[in-house]
Image 1: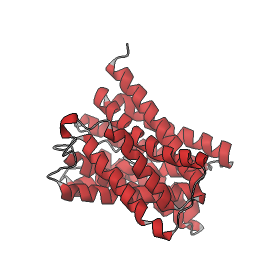
Image 2 (image 1 turned 90 degrees about the vertical axis):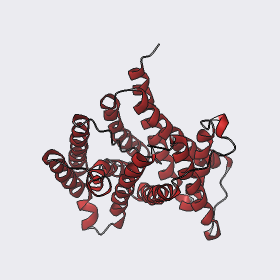
Image 3 (image 1 turned 90 degrees about the horizontal axis):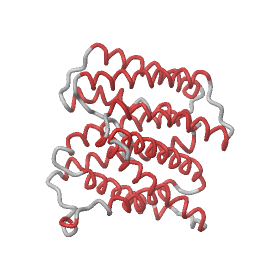
Image 4 (image 1 turned 45 degrees about the vertical axis):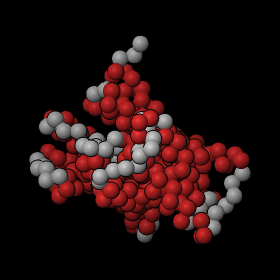
Length: 293
């Protein structure tokens, strides 16, 4: 029988694996319109959520008193999700994963304005270190005027506000309702792209595209359950396994070899997020930046 910490560790590992495979499929799906892939992410992402709705709420599960904040969370989430999908299709997998680790840096800054939090010298130093890491990673792309390097940063900005909004929503809203509205908004956005042309997938491709939604939905639920069951300090470092998976998948499938600057910049970004995370634990805060895709 596994302890709560062991179960949390297992759930976090499975969440990282699910997100990594989802990223892999999104990168593979470049022959399908982005809106179509978003639809599959949203529609099939609803399936895991439906199993979590309490029986007593089946008739009115969608009701909320905080529709405005749900809208802002969904809007920021859609920007982040679209940006990361574009980045995955146009940049090396390890590069996208590396920059995505910078989300806690932007969350730290946003918490000053949205949550009126005070940020001490250690977290400010961590923010600076993280920005240096981002510059090192993106410098080759920016020097070549590769606009796609901007998209992982847009993802971080969007995800950072999502973390703030979820923290506010979680005081009164269940996790499944927050996830439901987001998946529903992705589905609607995907459907709106239908007039711009969709490609009829083969049966095999249909299964793979459906997995984008199922894996994304399951990964978020596993992530939430991991934080609920175990100590955050125990399971959070496992998120960085995603970089190892990104390097392996990128090399084996697309012959992508990360540059020294990418690896060095990634190390700085990870160091920065670890410092921020440790300071949050020190101050007994839990502002966990989850992907929520």
